[in-house]
Image (cartoon, rainbow, N blue to C red; front, top):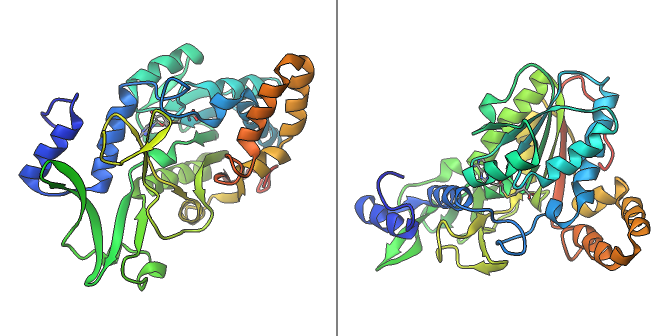
Length: 352
Ligand code: SAH
């Protein structure tokens, strides 16, 4: 966004809307999140939300084990690159790489990260990491082992509403000084997937062109260079109607217009769409599994028991962390793990 005081993004949005009319939800979400992430470390108790790698080291360790397994079965090709999208504090990478190293997997490390504040923290966690602004500059000289945890949910979505006269885009406009949802006047029927075209009036669907574009590029790379990918996020295995846009600040849900640039805006990930995109590009879909089941299949129970034996005084805390990651009423069901592999790589893998 040009001009405008960065400190007051809401004011900048208001001026922009007054001058040029309603803006798309994707623009609102994209600029709000870019400002949000680059200005702070949002993770942890003192921040706005907690993610699986920040709950327990076991999460990253099991991912490292999974990567080492598929790399060994692919014949230990080198050079090989570990690529993480939106790595936060670098905690997952650090746990995964420590574990993978025990099996001889010592990849070069590449982070796709938009936030200056987080890049700084990541340099402290992972020595020698190479940062990328997006996926287009990732290396081309070897297979990619790609991880994304809670990355795709932060990418901008657009919402389409079935109004009386046809499909319209939900946009962000003004009512007095308040940001509100308004409806665009352009017909959007052509942007609606075939299966939703005839949905009843009032139906809202959400799509993320940005997520589909990233997925498409990653799948292309897996097919051209080999490798494997795990995308972990909240969302559903089948496309569903309805808005899942939400804003989180200080571990609470808040109104999506309450504090642009100062809260985390996310939407559920549509794994049906992402799997189709990846397969269309020729990648192998290993599967889309519930996080709880995936971690259990990878041996989380045994690993947690081992940690408890080593630190019996921590047993209660470890049990809480374990439950947080796998229990159905916590992260176990809502979060999904999607696995992909590239040409010439194993088409089956643990957990799926
Ligand atoms: N994976 C980490 C952090 C999740 S928060 C964890 O599980 O703890 C989302 C991460 O994605 C942050 O690192 C954020 O800066 C990054 N991010 C969000 N949108 C991005 C974008 N468009 N481009 C690059 N990085 C982005």
